Image 1 (cartoon, rainbow, N blue to C red):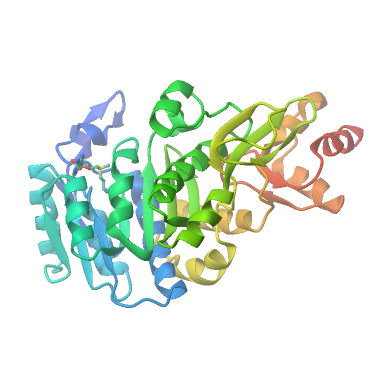
Image 2: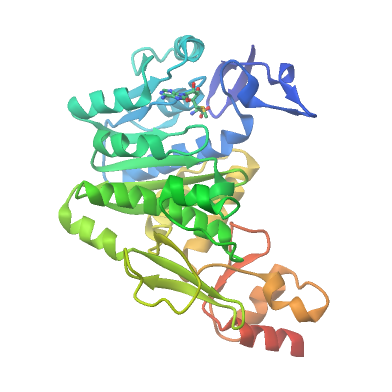
Length: 381
Ligand code: SAM
């Protein structure tokens, strides 16, 4: 075991140098799971929860993390979230449970963090019966699907549900049938397939919510390498359920015209002329007001460079149009060379249209311009 510093806390974690597979440490092989790359996820989550407290004018919130691993996330929430009154940490593994207790104790947080060793779904159901939590954070191996229904029960009205999914390959079209089985939606290998994936993930949460007469509203969504992260408000009111229903539909893409967009209609799309992916979330992936006025001010200097870089990218992206991103390769295909992303954005803005970078892909941008026209202008240059 080694001691590491992350955010404002120090915690004991397994020594990953003892679990090398190939030439890389493999967190899943350690007796308790700890992935240092997830610092980005944890840091941004503290900023999101702090932002949520300001946005919703909350005080003394309770946060539940039913899949805690080493407890690093729960301990960070207890230390870094303003005015948090209680954090519930839990893991089914005995060794994880012992390590969480050690880390809570080491940071002097015994009065804030309660530690349990239970099955996550049992814990969530018990919490729901006892009045629920303001924030539920689901950070599993692979798909979060098994925990969504009970998370929706455990989160209070106007609470925040934060979900990680590490099965990006499944959601973004590598294993389409697996995605249909697990998420009830068909992905497609569209140029914007990473956006299709995150929208399928949100639609899965939305459909569980609808079945319970709840609505959802995404505050923040992002992709960071091997995982998706979405944080959505849960609104326990039938009027919001009806609004949520209107935000489900399909995504389309036409290779011949480079057109892309969304088609409303759930469960049946209103137009079936194109090849479709879905059902998926067709509403906004971000709440731009939340990001600008409540999130950004909670992104701290002590977060990693990567965490701060993603924050800036998603704030910029949230101001772009709600149209799937395109790739520079799509419009420079006939050019014989690739145009840098900033040049493409410059050309489009010069034509008088919106264009912003997309964090989903290094060559990705969001625009409301006709991409065939952009391609012509670029080729003519
Ligand atoms: N959230 C942690 C972090 O930020 O470092 C990492 C959690 S790790 C990806 C997932 C954890 O879930 C593992 O520690 C595993 O033991 C635990 N787990 C798996 N199935 C569970 C279940 N049904 N109930 C409770 N814990 C479970």
